[in-house]
Image (cartoon, helix red, strand yellow):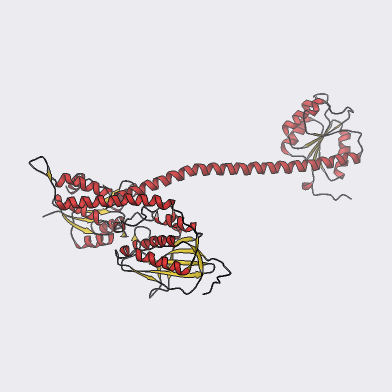
Length: 426
Length: 119
């Protein structure tokens, strides 16, 4: 027994034939086999139906008095390419070459076909239609995916250009700021032009200027030389490669100590104090001694620059799971009217080359190794070479003062070497 | 009575150059290191002109200008800014500055602007 399917789930079949009795005969057969049927005796109504519906199969006569078979089929196909067409005709001759040209004629049957055979052909046609539809749907989706991907690639290409332009603009702005800051080329320009105001002409066509003024101009040229050297250092730093080594934690500690000792000159500028905590575990990490020294140096100088004077910087080394953290904590420098601390939104951005959170420049740190907003970028570039990570963020420090306060953490994370011969013990 | 000018900049070099240029023209100059100090010094003295950097730690120039305008609506205020900071020039104006001077400044031009402002 064939279960009667709900109307909306039945496959639709369009039957076209001038013989009304035959149409009703088809209707009876197809309906009793679970199909939904639309009957019509002419091309016009068939085309109207196809405009609003999508039958799976078209069961049709093609030999009419008023239209050539090929024209009839062409009209049907023009209206809808999807349904599977079965020709069900009173004529006994097989498909002609002209009909064959229309390609997807599924079957050519005679109206004297038995009911069982007809239903069997229709079942196959419906199956074919479903497979064809799935394939078309899949191809449409694939085409859509490809279009989306192309659009995405195009957008990326366009954005890359915009990104490059923005990057270039940022670089130019930062370089210009750096050049024009107090101690640099800007200062030199202003002082040289000041000669116009203070130089006194002499009788022998020369000029007199105060010796102190000449000294200050020469001091400025030294600053410009340092700035130019730093540009070279930046280029070298970006190209530098470190070897990822296995080193004991005690050596990492020595590297930190070396870094602290090397930045005393910057520490003294705002009278900071640096405290290095102890550690009590023994293991190896993936690191590089020189790399640790350079990165910790940079993080310390940053801590000095961006914290209030006469405050403490705490450096600690501790184990967390499969890694070791080196943390550098400093107090937050108030920046009323600008960005104070490191808001979460900027935690990634601060590592971008030439990015500066605020456009301030403390010329007392003019001799620092990496300037113009490149220090953190270089640190990240280095740390990634040894499989480590670096973060900068705000925390509430409950441990190092009388009361909890917001501080900035510069954190380096180094991977512990998993080695059976060297068990980790705390 | 000599004209008294307050110059605010976190760069010691810039403070020195501003002072030297203004003193050549016979002005009296007081200096401040940042916006907070600048606002404090302004509240304690009488000035004919304020010249201020914009980007400073502790308190930036824009905030300082607003603080000064709470005390004195009339004193002329000029900001010192690099050319790229168009946004800053406008912010300065919105806060109450009368104009700006682009860094690095040209001393002769700088003094011309000061004379115009003061007259």
